[in-house]
Amino acid sequence: MTDVPPLPVHSSSRLEAIQAPVREQLDRVVDELRRIIASDFEIQDEVNTYLLGMRGKLFRPTLLLLASDACGDPDADALALAAVVELVHLATLVHDDAVDHSVLRRGLPTVNQLWNHQVAIIAGDFLYSRSILELTRIGRIEAIRALASASNEMSVGELRQLISFDALDFTEEDYYRLISCKTASLMGAACELGALVGDNALRSPFRRYGEALGMAFQIADDLLDYEGSEASTGKPVGHDLRERKVTLPLVEALRRCSRGDRELVRAFFTRVDPADEEIASIVTLVQSNGGLDYARMQARHYAEVAEAALSEIPASGEAMDALHAALAYAIERSR
Image (cartoon, rainbow, N blue to C red; front, side, top):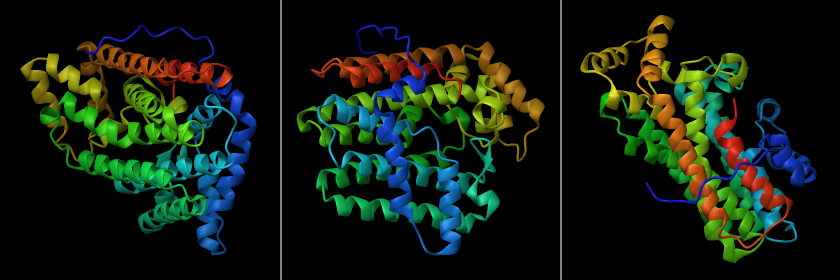
């Protein structure tokens, strides 16, 4: 493991405090989202309105705007790019839900549940295509490159996940490659784009900060499947296990557990529709074999790597303070 400076303790780890320096800009990002995906086709407009209503916390646009602010005076393109980053993220969620046949997202019915899988796939494609149109309007070729690269990596990550059927063959390195594609790539692109419209010379450290933050964020998110609750996360505990998704806590527990327990896990992954009691037994197995503690340690490691990248950026002020605080938020949040 790479030696990095210890992660400082920041008291303002709540997302509201992190977003405070760019709160007004985020409100305008929502307006940009509506502008970019406006449609006069009734069903498309209905789906778009629903998706905007169930949007998340705008964490990726927040990172882009904070990076831009940390680099100097806000650029006119920053708001549109922040909206595009959120649309790309939203498109991947719509497609993921359709692929996984998920019925809930953030506690609300998914598009494929309310309409059907065909509508969900087309809705995701619409968000992607409108994002591309907006990028061409902005006309920054490097912005197109960064987001196209991230989108390609996310697609590869989804395919990696689809072919990962055998929990016992899925390694820690496989897991890191997967989340690097599915999560870290877009967070890295968001931070890089913030620098692109701020100070181009800082693109590399901002990208590395975002990528490491994304790794920490996803590991912490995967931990919630074992220790969260449906009320806080918007999905049932054990949701990833039910969908045969192998994440770091299970990978580490399998490395430590007995042969008998490994065979128990292998048998579990052959179940078509595992019972709640079976899922609970796997959760207990992971807890008792140190899987959660190890995943927490690795999340903190990546947060420290992100902190080290941030230390290379010669800037100060509220935006930089918020980027530091985002690291604590990423690994400490409950949903």
